Length: 212
Image (cartoon, rainbow, N blue to C red; front, top):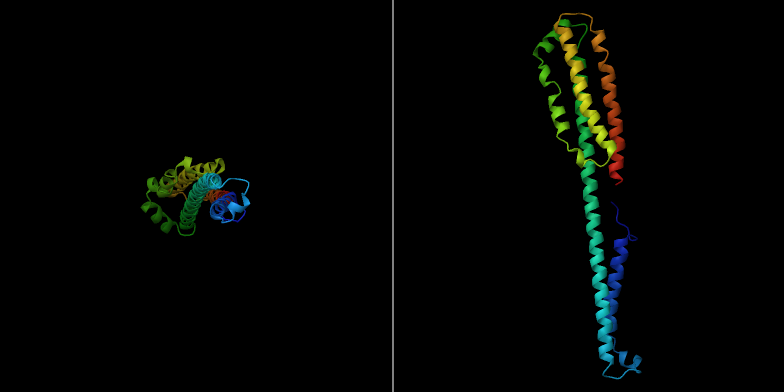
């Protein structure tokens, strides 16, 4: 968050300094006995002291207000940084899961059935994409900056479960010894494209978080 000279905090701070140093100047100015000739010598010091007290009270109030604004700005910046981290985490998970899904799809070689079958036999379908799903579920929804980002996280969680189902069906299809994988393999293309669209939405969410 950029700090500018024209911000309310800077204005209040400058006003406080003016009051403080102005009050000191008024209190010690040696010509008060001449300027205040209309007042008796016994009243002049009391009047100067009263002015100094008023200035001190005003300066204290201005400084307190300045500190309040600074605290609020710090809290706002902390919230902004938290939102950025949360959105970036969703983006990192989306990219990681996209890599998982693309790797899984690449292992399905239509021209080498035995290699594909060997890979599928060693694959634990229950653990497929499990790490990404657990990480996505660990992100607290109430920490996200807006409803669109909440929707983005929920979409990612749903996508991971959907992709696991699609990959598991493909594995079962291959393990059954059926050579024609096109009906099962084809849906993985839209799933991959869906994750790429989620990444586009994540970029938009990151811009919103940075603008807070």
